Image 1: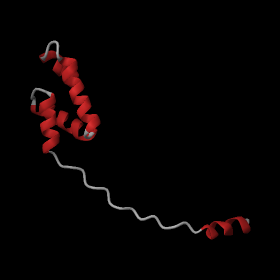
Image 2: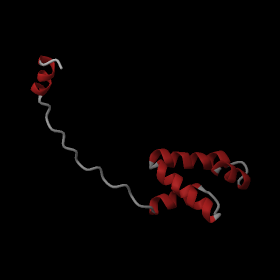
Image 3: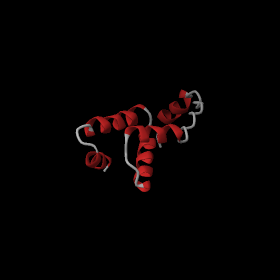
Amino acid sequence: MAYDQIKGRLNGSTNKEYLKILHLAARENETAVDAALGQLFDQGAFITASAVTDLVASGPKPSKVQDIVINPVVLSDYDHLLEDPC
């Protein structure tokens, strides 16, 4: 849908503008770009790479991944499975 709107408004530079949006999605965050495109559609605004970039930049940043603690594996627990057939 974004490509169609850009194509209807821009002649000749449609592919370049759309590729900028795709590059932003690959470089930053696909979900944020999708949300920005949805917001622009809802507002009836023209879709441009700069408009999408501005919305992505002003949106909430994803939270940092917290450290995950993985307990060491106790192999003797698995030895009991091999010794005692159920």
